[in-house]
Image (cartoon, rainbow, N blue to C red; front, side, top):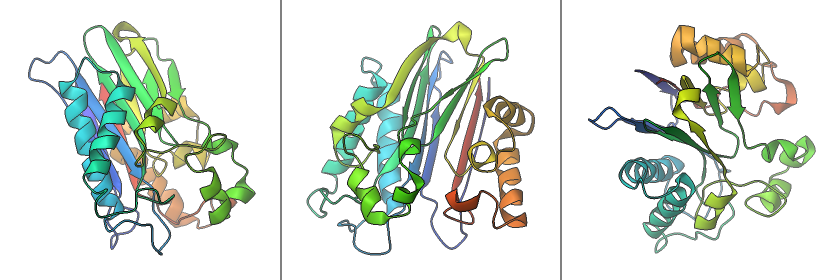
Length: 260
């Protein structure tokens, strides 16, 4: 089994708001993986005394523990329970009803001898590669359906955040877990998988250096660090690359590659 991961902050003077973990039981029969991308709020009040990286560490830790210990629960049920547990840890000090309360995108994978389960919420990506080399991208495309002119407006974007007809992230409402894209694939049909936050998936989605299959081949050959280094090189060489869709010069970038 091969497992490689990397996470790099978008700016050296700001905390990395991504989270990544892989848990492998001593039996060697399976494992779990969690990748989160914290949503950076505007510089004004978000109703919470905690930072986004505090939130992703709390939520990511709960997801890692529960996905490994509660095999009787689906990944959606685990996400719901982890959101509730995280919310309970700061509901007495913070306004969790605030639209910008700390939140994150989520990718989860859990596997054993028989199957590979997955969950994707918001704009991080999961790639599943078959033994024959076919790559399937599991995406939650709801944010992509929001017109770019709306996304340029904070007020208009907030009106669609975690609402019907808009897009969803893991914040303080446990019911959002059942909005996630989920599925189960036979273990024999998955040779390897990868998970990317949007800071790493820029190589495909923003800079259009290749499709998802090409991205997976790059991960297989050069590893997650190779992909992130390529993204950083493009970002540094051309500040206009990606056009109007590029909100930041650099974003927190996290990538995971697992060969089963």
